[in-house]
Image (cartoon, rainbow over all chains, first blue to last red):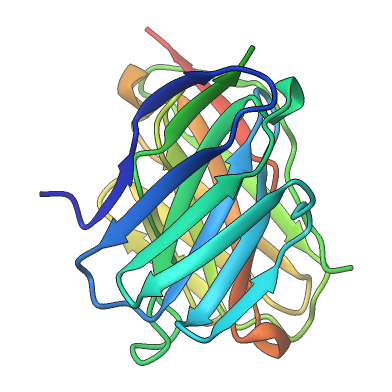
Length: 114
Length: 112
């Protein structure tokens, strides 16, 4: 099984619908992140969480919300999806205790809003 | 705002050549530097990390860091078509809990 699992892998939804993307990890990392990536563009940070009680907005949090249900689970919600939220979404994790070792990414969720 | 800059490319090299990918960063307090490889539609995969000035080699990959010049590079020797991907440079922010700032990536194309 993958260390960082994202569900669903692909999703098509209609404008105005609420949708939740889920991320779970078995790495035991304390930090989790949500990014979006648009074609030809880099990664943009949506939200991040340093532990269960510490959730912070990233550079593009408008229209999104998150929930850190447990250390291993971090969900991203689109309350009312709009077409310009069509993108590839990645969850990532990192570990404060082991220092500066970069992020581990999930396989991504391809979201299409029609 | 802390920035990480990369030439978007595409960088085209023939098979067997050395590919040189470059990255500059704005935060002098950065301590850790990473290179990720991302195939189209796939997630970024960590391929190299470097923490001190100089070179670090791992197989066909060499990361080079020059903190005085705020410059980090990735060399890929004996480039293969399977190396064709986008390479993301990432730099840690020591003042933000070591969160990473990503560059926009350089697309590498290795032609047979």
